[in-house]
Amino acid sequence: MGTRQDPNGTHKNGGGPSTALAYLDPKYWDERFSTEEHYEWLKDYSHFRHLIQSHITPNSSVLELGCGNSQLCEELYKDGVTEITCIDLSAVAVENMQKKLLSKGFKEIKVLEADMLDLPFSNECFDVVIEKGTMEVLFVDSGDPWHPRPATVTKVMKMLEGVHRVLKPDGIYISISFGQPHFRRPLFEAPQFTWSVEWSTFGDGFHYFFYTLKKGRRSLDDKGSSKEKLEIPSICLFQDELEGEDYLFRTNIDELNC
Image (cartoon, rainbow, N blue to C red; front, side):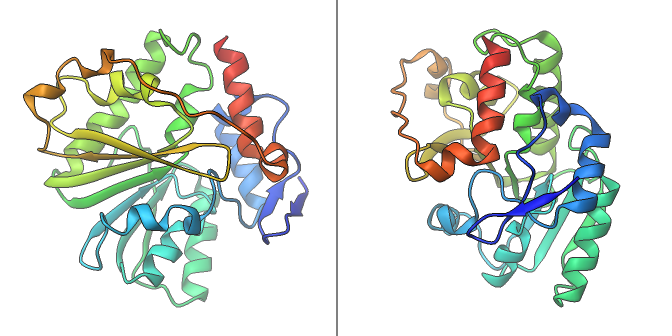
């Protein structure tokens, strides 16, 4: 599987798979990570650094879900956050990330092979859990986005319950996503969760969503708020965004969800 390099130095898989369903196949990711050096889903750190700064401090213990070959953990480390644990389901991604971090001297960052649907951590052990585009994989065969398939909902809720469990009482879950609030809020605001839900957007024209879910901050006023009418930002795509795999991935998901 060949790779190509974009003007920003990001190595891209040759246009992505022929169908979004490939993203559900672990073999696809192992094969991809065996040849692809680096790819950033949903823009690189510089585009949302201003949003993350108020939520992560040098003293934060951070868990990154689905690290792949992203440089997110490296950028956080450069900003002074040293207690970082990264997980990925792909053994190839984990091995490559371990080697890369060691070669750069980032010895404190831990990288483990683990499933985000079955987190191997004790309760209330992280200040921050972050994922960038990782949850999107669970939605590639979700069907109608307004009424996703029960199997999809079960997986998403299992992931969210695990995140909620490993967060400290005042911890924060950061989800960087394609998913618009009117699709994500019914899941984020399920009654078993104590977190509040807020979001911002970033991106030049293609809007990405930066969700911050603060554990223990949910108020009684939040109940049922997912029924409110939400304004959807307009999308005006730039050429580089049209050519990127982010757009391919989102387009394929939308086609599957129609």
